[in-house]
Image (cartoon, rainbow, N blue to C red; front, top):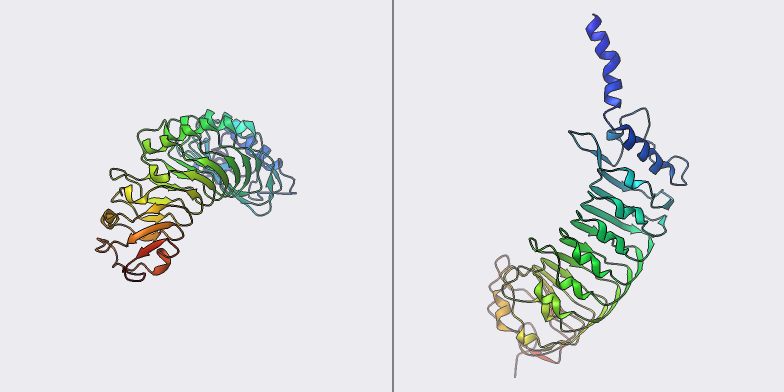
Length: 329
């Protein structure tokens, strides 16, 4: 009878201490950094912090490696205590409308961080240059905030970065030339800078990058965006709509992998190259509101659906003709 009794007495205590004490005290500091009376009610010190809402621990070491917070109720700024979570790999602060202030420099002191998401908040200020200190970072998502200023060229120097999303902010200035020289040569980076106030010509260096996805729509960008195209590339999404791009579309070559193409609302001229029909995965196409001329290609080799573009994909161009528009004369 003695052994079962000892097990019952000591097993809850050992379970409660799986979480490292330093990590637990840091999480409680994080909690009390907000002005709410009792944010995260499940973060009860009497329970193992590895079981708290939004907290992920390594199953072997029990160090906190992930923090995933979604809350309509939190009020305050991003707490500066996060570097005390020395093993943190994933940080996601999402849909927290009352999260304000700037991204604190302490975020740049998380050496193991691979995944950083601060999105759908009212965080403001610049995209910090110190994010380039996060040498393990692979995913950077700072979308749907109130960030302003220019994009730090140093972000392209992160050795493992292959997804960067700065969309839906108030960013200004050009796309850095350094974005044509991503340090990560092993992967195919995804780039989303859409819905900002970026301006200036597209850097020619971007032709060097084999992007998996590109969305730079709804900015004030200009120049030759044909740098994103190329037959040997693996890009599946190119969205450059609602800018001021001017280039000869007839000279563009298409990758077979292309799934989404939207070049609408620009000043793009020339004809639609017949080789576009070889894009067998194409599901969405919009070339409307440009200065295109000539016959719309036929004989699409689409793999997943029959040819079904309607006239809205092509209208408001200078002199395009053929199905689904009026016949060519």
